Image (cartoon, rainbow, N blue to C red; front, top):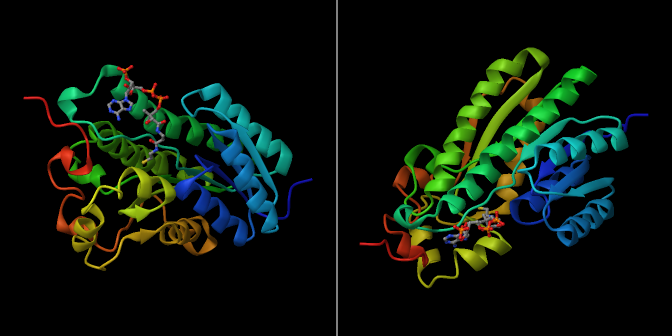
Length: 269
Ligand code: COA
């Protein structure tokens, strides 16, 4: 029998923003299925979901493998009897000047972002269409999808691709009751960004100065926006992009124009 609680499926749910969104939905009455590459992280988030009164399900996988993504969502559908929302959150990124980026480095990030988002969206849509259930698909992008971002060409190009993907799917799948939207988070504190981005001396201060609202984001800021977009209050919102960044993108690039600002290698001359 289908669960009487709505069900969220989220990729990359084992840490960072993905974990925060998973827990926000559990607090809001959802059961949650997670996927990610590190099983210990998934287990720990699943325990937190259950402590909040939700049921949890997870699969350890790489979103670049379409058959595993499909099997994960089918198994969650089997376990819960229904699916309601998908968040495509899994992403790869690292700072590297474009001139130095290897073909494998390019493929690695663009495939996690683009292939992973498409595989999960398509597998989710097939289940919802088969079940004749509406659903919400939300993908996490970045404001540099429209500005570009020196130092992360693989991520910027694929986030722009995801924006076009969600708009395309909103137009194709609206007839099935599937809404497809994106959130573009600004600079946010998470365990990962605090370690990988904000530990460079002076960067947090510089980034904060670039944000009209005067602070970096909290994971909760993004999780609340994601929860809203999945809710009945957003039932006529589709094909939309919601920037959640304290108006930072209006001030220009996040990190300035030299990747070495963030500790990346100096551009080859
Ligand atoms: N600078 C330059 N090149 C890098 C790099 C860096 N910091 N990190 C990885 N690469 C290159 C590798 O050298 C390799 O290319 P090569 O074979 O030509 O040497 C290629 O990228 C793939 O690396 P690998 O570690 O095998 O990739 P992966 O597919 O296992 O991992 C990544 C994916 C690269 C995105 C990895 O950084 C990762 O898993 N990150 C965690 C998730 C994440 O990035 N989250 C951020 C969300 S914003």
